[in-house]
Image (cartoon, rainbow over all chains, first blue to last red; front, top):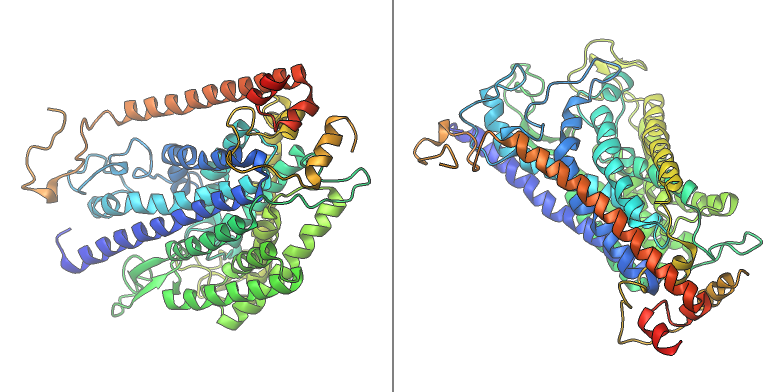
Length: 486
Length: 79
């Protein structure tokens, strides 16, 4: 890197992604705090450690194969085979400390200039995607608390965090992904790419795992299992909001010459801008407007729907952002707000309908807040952004559902199919199958007696040894269940 | 020498600067084995933990275990 402007762009980009990673760390802190608050006292430490293990296990497996999947899979299977990605295989020199010179792995897809770029960007870009991976796995963690074995959860976390979500990112969240090129799929801030697939994955596991003991009365009526610390739950959600800023920023490319060789290559005067992951233009200012307006819309709707319940008001804020995220690179702020409000209504109503109808115990509403809101938001973006160019590098008339300016146009059918593929195809189905296998091996759910006594107390000890217990109605229900009643 | 770096005088032509370049395959293989071994250990350890808990609860009765919040020491002392 000897040219001044090029060097500045590269090093600014490196620093930019590094900052996003630090912010996004708060998402995982938030999830841990939130789940600890939502679980009962007898399960706190198990809940904490289960989600904490996402960090090391998804990190190392994302190093082993997750990063390679993102670059290798965009064309596979509908537009070709795997793409050569020599900078992203774990044994690449560029996956370590590197100054960009002394090329030893030059290939057709990796020239000297690429070496200079990836030597600086590879680690921070990898980490930005990795933090999305943690988030995707962590979303499932909350849904399954208080009865899942750690061994099963961490296997599912690796499956989703380092395999399935990054496949959907390669297909639908990269400028050259086949879903983008053929279907005109658009999901700028990952309504389905992260949240839809995580919600679908959680649903697949829950269908096999079953509800917590005592969650449903003998007549099928759902019971509210009290959280041990509602204040922790809300602080956790606040931390997730904070980390979400980093998530939004990390979804952008911060500075690029839009007319230059990496984007349009049209020979016009340089025009520097931020872009989304599809290399189509947006700005930090735009997404800041829309993040805050969708958060506000979601909070207002959540407050009204739940009549001021803290858990659902805060969850509404999160679901609001998730709903609007698919189009928050382009929406007007008021559009973002209204879409968020409708999305929260859909997620809230569906959560309780599914709970009553299918006896599904989603302990923290993860399937609703992430899955239903993400799915709905992706479909809405297909209508709202109908006719925009979905990317910058498609071949003429490539799009199955319409083209504009030589590339596939964003359209309702493409986004609907994408939402279905991510929620059901890459989310629900693989996790349901793996959960079935784990269940068959006896690795999925803790024994009934352990669940009743608590996942902590036999081994970890009481999380609050200096504070006396106070029974709630659930402890009496546990005693009845222990006697084979209730 | 553990590394091919002997000077910082020509960074433009410097590549990998971590120790022992060229053994990346071996490092990755070792890391994958550590990862798989960790899962094996964790599965055995967690299942053994639940088995031990079940033995205690069946010994003292689940109702007693619930009275003492599953705490082994308290159950052993009082029963």
